[in-house]
Image (cartoon, rainbow, N blue to C red):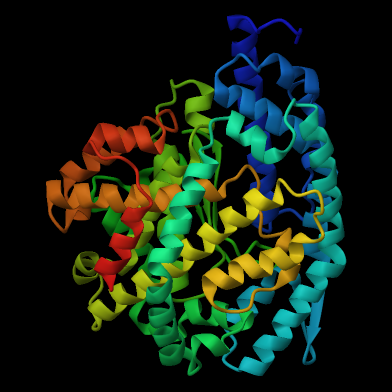
Length: 489
C-alpha cells in the first residue's frame, strides 16, 4: 500500500485478505490448542500474509475505519513476535513436571491442582508450575515485550497504552470505575471470600495461597449437582427453548474430548463467521465444566448467527465486550435460581446462586486489578520491576498472595481485559432488561430467543455501549456489577 489514504478498492482488498488471515490463524490456534496438532505454526501463516503486517500498511490505514487501522497495527506487532508465540506454545506442549513420582504435562498442572484434595501436594504442583513458567516461558515473554515496545514507537505512539487510547479505548475512565468498584466491594469480598474459603477448604482468606484458589473454584462437592452426563443435554434444552437446535446447526462444531496437550482454557474458534465455529473445552469436571461450556456456547451462538453479509470488521473485529457479554449471559445461567429450578432437579439452589455471586465478585476484582496493573505495565521503562507491582496490585485486590512470576503471562494483550470488565456490566444490565421484558424465566421464552438472534446477527458492529443503549436506553456502568453481586448474595 502507498502512503496516500487507501482507496475503497484497497480497503476492500485489505478486508478480504484480513478475513483469510484470521481464518488461517484461528484454524491454526484451534488445531494446536485443541491438542490435535503438536506445533503452532503461526510463522507460516504470517509469511503467507506478509503484506498485511508491514509497517507501511499500518501507517497507510491511519485514516481508515478504526477497527481496520487497529487490526493492521496489531498485525504489524504480532508479526514481529510470531516466533515468540510459537516458542511459548512449543514449550507449553513439551514441558513436563515431575511431582511425587508422577509426570504431568505443563498444561495439565492447573487441572491436576484443581482436582487435588491434598493441600501440600497442590503446593508442590503450583511451585513446580511457577518454576517452569519462570525458567522457560518468562524469558521468551520478556523478549517479545521489549520488541513490542520498540515497535510501538514506529506507530507514532510513545507506548502501548497511548496507542490504545488512540484506538478509542477509554482506559482511564474504566480504570476510575474499577477503583470505585474495588473500594466499594472490598469489605464485601473480605467477608464473603473468607466465608467461602472456610466452608470449602477449611482455611480463612488470610491463610489462602495461589494453590488453593483453583481448588476453591473447582468445588468438587458440587459435582453431584452438576453431573457431566447432563451438561450437554442441559445446554441443548436451554438453546431449544430459545428456538435454537444445537445439533441441527451445521456451522457449529463441539470439541469436548479430553487430550493431554489440549489447553485447559476453554475457547471458541470462529474459523469462518458465521460458516464454521468451533467450541472447545477441556473437561475438568463439575460446575467448572458447565460454566465453561455455557460461556463458550454464548460466543459460539453469537458468531454462528452473525449476518454473513456484514463487513469483515463487523463480523471479525469490533468491541470484544459484545461477544464476551453474550458469553457471560449464557455462563451465568448455570447459577441462576430460575434456570436451576427449571433445568436441574437439585437442592440448595440459593446456595448455588450465592456461590455464583461470590465467584463473580472474585473475578471482577481480579480483572479490575489486572487493568490497573496493565495500564502501569505498558507505561513503565523497567519491565522486570513490574514483578513486584503485579503481586502488590493483584494481592491487594484479592487479599491473598499472588505469584509475581505471572507478571507477564497474565497479560492477554490488546487490553482485552477491558472486554471482560465491560462484558460483566453489559450482561448485568441486559439481564435486568430481559427479566423485565420476559420474566425471570426469560431464557425459556421463544420471544427472548428471537431478540437474541436479532442482536447476534449484528455481529461486532455496534459496541457494547451502543447495543445496550439501543436495546434498553441505559448507559453501560461498572457499578451495575456490584449490584448484580449483591442480588446473588
